[in-house]
Amino acid sequence: MPSIPTTIVPTWPAARRLADPARVVGFALAVLLLEAVLAHGIVGPQISKLVFLFIGAFVVAFVFRFPMPTALVVIGLTDFVFYPTYFAHQVGPVSVRPHELALACLLGAAILRPRRHSWGGAPGKALLVFYGMVAVSSISAVSSGSASLSDTFNFARPLFELSFFYVIVRLFPEPRQRRTLLLGAAVIAAATGVVALLTSLGAGFGSALQAAGNQTIRAENGLDSIDRVRLPGLSAGYALFWYVAVQIAMRKGGKKLGWSALLIGITVDVIVSFNRNMWLGLFLGLFLMMWFGGVYLRSRLSTAIGILVALVVLVAIVGIPGSNSSTVAPIVKRGSTLFNPEKTTNEGSLQARFKETSEAWPAVQRNLLIGVGAGASYGVTEEEQIVSGTTVYGNRVVPQLFLHNQYLYLILISGLPGLIAFLVFLLVPLTAAFRRPVKDPAIAACGLGIGLVMLSALVAIYFTVEDMTAALGILTGVIMADREGPAADDEPSGLLA
View 1 (tube, rainbow, N blue to C red):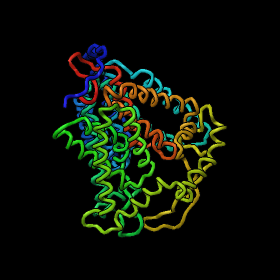
View 2: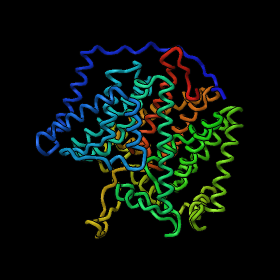
View 3: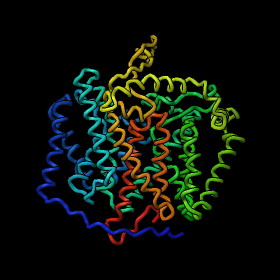
View 4: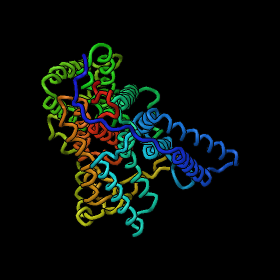
């Protein structure tokens, strides 16, 4: 069916290109920075440094010329099968991560060669304020000796992926570009679901993923049952679930089938994650999309969701072909707790989170202005294993430097002003998305993705991990770029065109 017409807003003039000398200087500075890193970090013959420098210069040039493929590479490195740290390379005292280098190059292109001269309005300014407060808090922690420089840097660096916001609003002003970006992210998330399902059923590469840093693969209910698998792409799938569902509801023919396949992959990923926060979030999201999506979307979405629910129920009753009945039993058992919350009150994880929140609360009250800093102790401890090779020698008590309640944690690393700035960064795009749901329900679905992440962040680490901060940067950037309108007169606005 033809796309739903959207409100036409005043177009922006084409972005003026920087003069050639300015672009050459910018490229030279990027190469100089790369050269400095290589010179101080890589140990080997001089020829090796020159080879790496040449490759680095070529990569920088590629990023400036092809920002969209680079953006998709960044998503693939942060929200796919392997955690971003798996690809890290030690360069001197710093662990260099490819996705951060690629994103930094995209930011350079957004600053030097923007296609739209915009910083995203109030959310863009709020994000800068938040970064500033994190920096102030971290500098204070290092200066006082309450945190080491390495801990402060490593605990704060996942926030860098939020700057994807600036890349989108400055480099991708056309809705067509943003549709491509979201489609690419959805494909990556669905592919993650396929890998997660195979791993949960005992595929041979599960141990390889475990060794690569995916520490959330474990057995549920014995060796014959399905394993719990949580890969980085789960974050993108959770954030984009309703965006993909809306695309199914509003499409026909082959496109509907294609989007349906993506939703199945994402749904499988969420199911085998055994993440009740996400299960509950998507359940609540159904009612919100039905309420805000309008009559037309409501009728089509009901059919699509009905088919999906029937498929899930069929799998729960009949099981997965080639597996025994105990395979899906843990899923049914865990899902039943959503309707019987009293069954979860005695679970160790919930008790541990309540304990850490209560222990952190006094530190939060004492440090409302600038917090204690990223990587600094705030009075909560945890036990970690003492491991040498494959042998475990026991446990030791160490300071816990993170907090599952992400709102309190943001106060700890940036103070109350930092938390307020962060909420402005998320809430302005969220409210903007829900102001035009009937005209463009896909934008509303992006806003819903932000809202679900914010809800889950009360009990899960979703604001300060690379996979989820990248997803939040994408969603907020897409919404604000859509709000500012298309860059060309002949470009239809919205995400359904």
